[in-house]
Image (cartoon, rainbow, N blue to C red; front, side, top):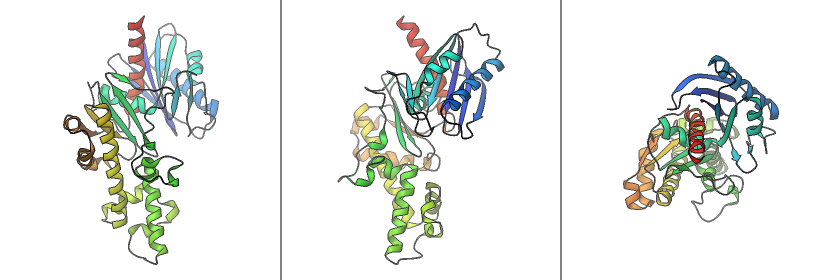
Length: 326
């Protein structure tokens, strides 16, 4: 049996051949370059062929393929929803890949599922049976591994963490992506900074924030972290709120699931990795006291590869599970 892991993102698709211990044999990456719909699936098929050709894998050999997608993989309909890929509202990726690769079994999972499996396989949560991966980038999601199994839920939407309710009363600005995400994702941090700058300027207070030098509508989390490093009070306010919410969210996970490890990853961790100790301190104020003392917080050890190694783990763990259940 040969294992393929495919990590599909919004701009590229990476793939690798893996051994049963999840060690990587060879790796390739292709750019999406604006492709949509079936063109993206075609690129995934092309990548599978490239990997199998370079690995000199005969067509007759059994193959198990794990695919990580940037969205939700629906197990009941065998389709996936990926908001950053036009035409992928209910796309039948699993069946298309299975039909195109001879002697293959295909498993498709959300990126957050891949992230936690990657960390448990080769990262800071290696060997854990109970671990949480909180992915903070444009949005916020979580992969949840409990008693050795990833949680999926009734419709595979487990881990939509951006919708955590952390700050009453309800604000209409949270309608689009939830309370937590509106304050503590990359997009949310930028949004809160823009609001703060506009409030200053509307009060006629100029020259009080480094962020005023930028086109307000083009401010991103990158500029906010840059301002934070310059001790800008507005940026400090926005980032401190995010740290507080990351801690509260992690505390809720710790109290609910009693994990051994909470891993922070995604594009913001990254620049926010330096705050993990502060996040743990904040979480300790809110979480069940015995559980939090038994839990460790870490930034991801696989900041750019958790999805790829997780895709390999998806193939390996699902194949072993199905084999044992037969």
